[in-house]
Image 1 (cartoon, rainbow, N blue to C red):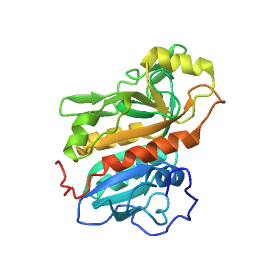
Image 2: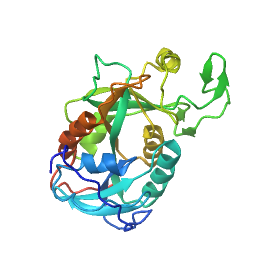
Image 3: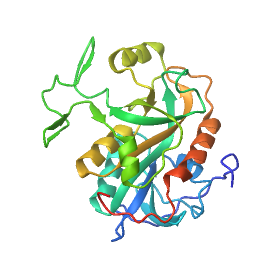
Image 4: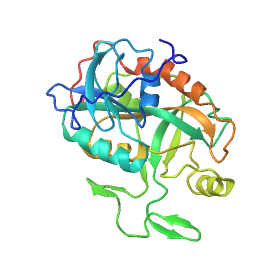
Length: 262
């Protein structure tokens, strides 16, 4: 089935919120069933109704033990889903897929593929007229083993891909900001660019980046670019999903035996 021709399927009530199973699996997660279905549309073994929000369903996709998860939209849903999924202790790696907005159409044009090499949460900290100071509250979001996380989690997509035996597709890597509200005006866009210089904007990446860092689980965030941040026109969701669909099979290496901390 081509990415351009998928039809909406009912969500399946099957699955477990904690993915109860002793075998290690590669988790493929997305905010919505639409994004996950499109991402898997060219993958052998992925056919069938997707699990309902928050539930995990296991399948053998391209010969790989795979867990599928629809988290729900936004950072709160993503955090809840990430905590439940990783608590099972059977997730060997996480691939977060979906769509994103671009801050730089020359580097990441609409319809291209973007890879997060860091995740930023620009809404944590002390809010002032000049912006948000992540250290203003004096409490990091994470502190342990000599690492403090205030508003940014550094990612290693190349290293994590190697750890799970995945092949990264051709794409543009850069920082991604996670927001609870989509940026729809030039003023907010300019403030975010000035403070963080991100490549893309999304709504779920930071919770997954933080959760997988704390659990020492490999993490890859891959998104099709659907729109320019700050503009309400020029969206091309179809192009973003088709690009994503073409890339995902390369991330699922057939016959790979997964083990935590590979």
